[in-house]
Length: 271
Length: 342
Picture 1 (cartoon, rainbow over the protein chains, first blue to last red):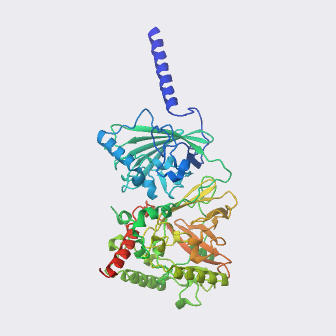
Picture 2 (picture 1 turned 60 degrees about the vertical axis):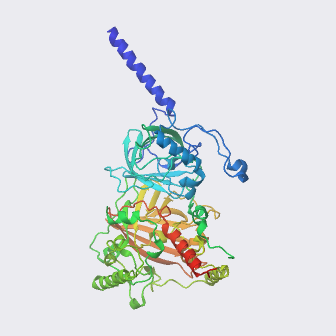
Picture 3 (picture 1 turned 180 degrees about the horizontal axis):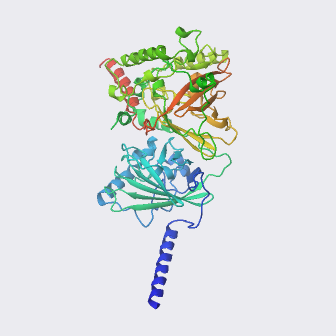
């Protein structure tokens, strides 16, 4: 009897500790029941946006000067707390060297400079809003940045036909949480402006959980055996854009990247 | 790897050279639109669109209009006096076959995209219309206004004065070559590949995805007003509502750079109607209204065919745009070759 009580207490304590660990890593309101979409699953429809500075660097980073002194404070890089759960990104040694090289050349190599599609998970925490249009079979995530988008297949999972920028997304519901399994990526996107990167073996499992009326907890587990020694996780809240009549604003950044990409091929005048 | 996948691997390459001219060939038109057919036969029950679980007409799915490729916008003179629905059957099939042959032969020169990128899927023979404009009844775009003529002349004059060649800079190329946009209604006008579309609905919204270049329009249905005139965009500002089973979308606030057929971006209104007329058909009709450009509004129509074998795939047009770099590089190389050697 006494032994069983100890056993029960131990189990309860372990449970509490685990729950506390969950809470510490995520602003999770465990008991919140989201309003339902017509198909009975949690309703994620809306215009959402990440705050913070994850797109500058997933990891902890102090404020720094930007590359162009002419831009003064406008061009400075804001500091911020990282969104990587439990310590630094577990790069393999050779991959860490590549990351550092990326970082040293970030103003030339970051695909965002060129208005390339952002990939997953970066699309989620770019400094632009995105909109979710949720139907039973397909969930559209339309990102303001670069008019990029992806559709999450909620039916029978499909294999990636080809490696590409935004990957192939298969989703399922686990109670209050939308779980999205993503594969089929190319190796051309980065995770942030600090040069954090991946290979074609990238596998991202995302979890979208409503916290309350206007927040989603976003978590992504990132696995890539070529680059990382173990899977790792990011966690951040998404905020609903609550302005009246809010909508995405067209941001076709191709035209902002053309001088950079093709400037060497412009006809020289006066020669 | 199927053919469409191969096309996508080759994205962006020579977009400019492989676009089919929309007006080049008389095209085939097919059978009468299903709704009209139903009306003509009083015995048949009219098709009723299925509904979403929240009660809106259900338009969701993947669509293609690949086989409508090459259909001329205006009624060709050979059909003067005839109505669209009268050109059908063998007559239409013969026109479509001729159009297909002409399209293939127009790529006979030494420089063109590999044939297996596109000829395998080319099937103009299934095209359903001999032309697109249904109003005015003569199938012709109404005359342009004096303002429009003056605007066209001013633009041509500005181009002349700038003295630019066709490839002095990327800005001398089209927005399509640059993988920026095909605008509206251009994004749904079939071209050589990438003619897949997807409609996704949620309560209060309809989203339309366009494969070519990659565009996503999210259309609010809640009756909100259009954005302010300061908010102009390439794809415009869409607002939708249901009229019975028809989705009506009014789009305004266009940028002048891509306003349809050189319209005035600030005054152009495009009114699209999407109606499911058969289990696998959504009829798309577009009314073009810009009093600054045309003397009266005009309307064209085209069916979209639901086809699960033609899902929208990622078209990373800009990311793979070697074509634009190569066009500019070729122009600079040509100039260098012409320079007298010192």
